[in-house]
Structures are given as C-alpha cells and as structure tokens.
Length: 193
Image (cartoon, rainbow, N blue to C red; front, side, top):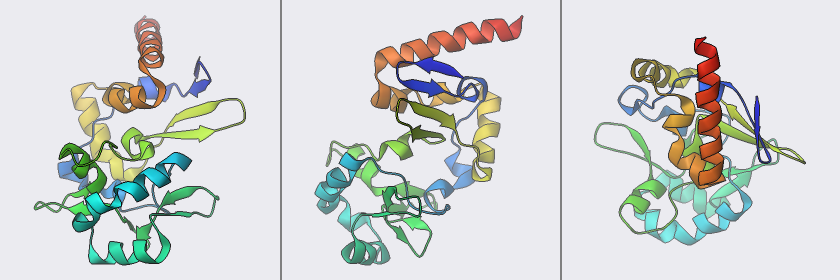
C-alpha cells in the first residue's frame, strides 16, 4: 500500500494489468451486481438535473423505475446508488446495435448535451473507493465479469492505474496522479531487480 495525500492506494493498482474489452464482456458491470452504482452526494442532484437530456435513451422500464423511486436509492449499506431495473440493469443503461450495454449519461456527454461524464464510481471501475474518517482507500476490485479485461491488459501490458488515468485525475487531480506514476515507476524498478 502507498499513501498519497489523504489516500491509501492498494499496491495491486500499480501491479495488475487491466484494459476493458467491451466486445467480450458486453458491459456486464452495468448489469450485474447487488445494487446500483455508488454515487457521491453531489452526483444525485447533477443526475436529476441532466435527466431530460438522457430520458429518450432510457428503456420504458427504466423510466418507470425513475418515476417511482427516483434516480437513486440507499442500498443495504446505507449508500446512495443508482436505481436499477428488475434487480439488474442500472437505469441509465442502453444497448447498442451489437448488444453492448452502455451508459446513457456518457452518451449525452459525448454528444455535448451535458457536462457530466458519468458517476465517478463508474468512470473509476475497477477501482473502488472506501471512505474512512481520515483517509480514502483506493482499491482494485476483482470481479469474474472482468476476466477478459485482465487478459487484454496482460496482452497490452497496461496497468490498472494507466488504464484509469483520466478518471483518477478527474477524482484526485494531476499532482496526485503524477505522484502515483512516480511511485509506480520506482516500485517497478525494485520489482525488476
């Protein structure tokens, strides 16, 4: 583990390889799981405000869930998460012509309709954040649905932190990421000896 500012970063984030392979997994991380995607408090309001821009991309079932319970709910851990359809799909999922599950919020962002990319927990995946009183743990979440991403990461030699450069900078800033990269380089020098 490594400390950077007020975060404790798990070593496997700089040790393990990862590169999403949507053609293999079909976006299963947006469908499977015990609850919706974790949300930061400020994200709930942001998502409520951008709802008109994504509404037409949502399934009728997702629209019904949102009308009934809103864009988010508190899960069994008491955390705010995106609402889900039939205990599976995030309400913000849609399927492209190849059957790949994608995010309607990200689609609206890419089309210039909104200035919010998507929830940070989604953007950071497979990294999961755990907040404690004095620090935030930055952990690598291993999940069987990501086997193809691990294989593709191994093939390309791309580490988790490299794959997630953009969302890590979005969450923690450029300086934080530079420090993580420096630590990773030094760590890898030692590992190769």
